[in-house]
Amino acid sequence: MSEEDRERAWEYRDRAGYPDGVGYLDEGTDELVDEVTADAVRAVDRPSADAEAEIEVHRRDDEHVYFATIGDLEVADLRYDEVDGRVVVYTTTVAPEFRGRGIATDLIADVLDDVRGRGMRVTVYCRVVAAFMAGNPQFADLIDPEHPGR
Image 1: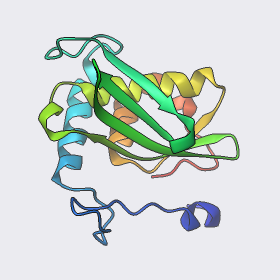
Image 2 (image 1 turned 180 degrees about the vertical axis):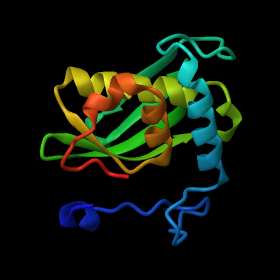
Image 3 (image 1 turned 90 degrees about the vertical axis):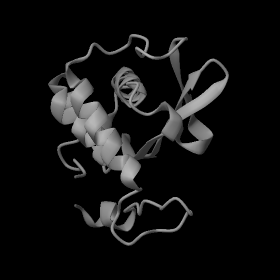
Image 4 (image 1 turned 90 degrees about the horizontal axis):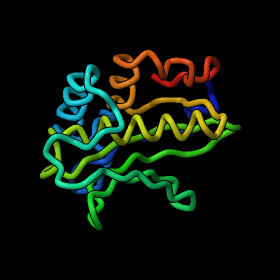
């Protein structure tokens, strides 16, 4: 990790909103890693099997967040920053009641497609995104070789 990235290191917060000292969000992080790893063989950009409506992904540049919605409900988000022409990915979260439906997979795939379309690279500190990318080599070219992250 470069000195610049070390200074920007992200400490995940626990459920109460406090850093936990080990860099993990909560037990939900492990669930999301399992979900995106299992979903690696699943086709992306299709509705979640359990969703009644198409998952839509949006980007709020001012808040540095991509978020997934089902209808009017915000069900997942991916937090990032933009540094020197690259997207630095910190966290991915899915509301507990929507986990296990492939939403994280859809969100991450759409985010990476957007990053590619914008001609940018990624630095990944999020375990969930790292697991997804490991199982989806079509996105490997997006990793910034000088600042890969984890």
